[in-house]
Image 1: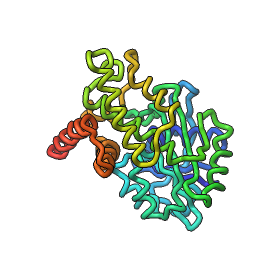
Image 2: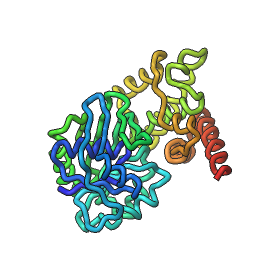
Image 3: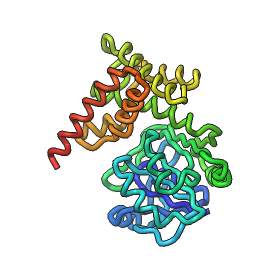
Length: 306
């Protein structure tokens, strides 16, 4: 099986590297600067699960179709990403996005056909430093994937076999859309709270009214998931609710780190989409709306700077 990763940053570099360790045939579609880094220094990952330093196959433009294209990019770059991978999508190719949220599926389905876009998500705190080293920031490296259509089951089987020899915490889902929505509503709660309050989960919960705020925002986002037909499972509600009300937690969302360094965010793709779905169902989400307003002001200021 020939696998193409769009991007060799944090997510693509980590999971692609682990697949290469397991013997998979992996190529990275990257920009020239990243290609030069990988040619000079190889793919480098520093992780609590063991470091990787391995030569990587790279292309700056695909010249042939691949069996599986894994898309690891930011939501704001989706249109460019679709154009970039289009030459790699042959008549039998399958694409698996590893983007946050769910809105991108409509765009990918329109571009390639829903029967060719399988479901995928990951939980991994990770970053790419200025030297091109992928730095894994915790022990969490969870990957979930599954078929959205019956015709994708053979590819899901093949991907499971590719990950079987690796140390990745991977899981084949029988209900990938529910898994995607469970991550989506949790991420909206985490990003909305830590961006709005400019702090960690613990820092918010240690203040008077902080835990009540976290619970209220969490409830708003869970209600939207339920209205969309993907009510979170009770076990996940308990687990995620506990994480968001932990007054010792040092966790914040990657979106909050983007705000802190003055970078772009996926505000519209995550909070904007969640808020729009709430309005479509007539749901009141005042805290979610406030968090979105905060991020829109941030994005406007960035745009004004050019």
